[in-house]
Image 1 (cartoon, rainbow, N blue to C red):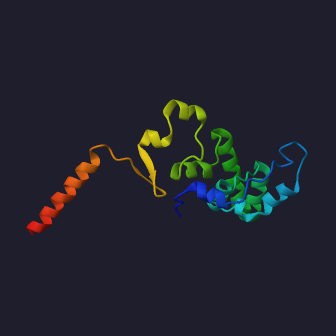
Image 2: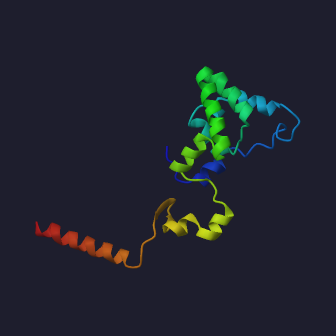
Length: 157
């Protein structure tokens, strides 16, 4: 599944859920229970895409409980491994793979200030909802010359 425009997909997705009561220190909430039983939070690959599209977050205990509920012992072991990976690297395995395949959702402001935007660094421009290389000044002239030359080659045969 290729998303041409991640912003469009985010606009279609539900708005991010309000801050959970568990994050404010008041204990287990109904939202936490919903995170545990929501299969979209626990199916590999689907859960990563779901969280990126909706902006929803799940805390580690709820993730471990739901992964165990749906995956049994294998889900528990994989969830504990993912929790350890997240603790060490700051990103889950799914988020790391998502960033490698699709790219990070947001660039830190300091990186943008130091390195410029991704489009500036790579020379890509947005045209008709697709990213395409920005033509160098002489590139379009070279392409036109190559096209004319190929026409002459075909005419010779």
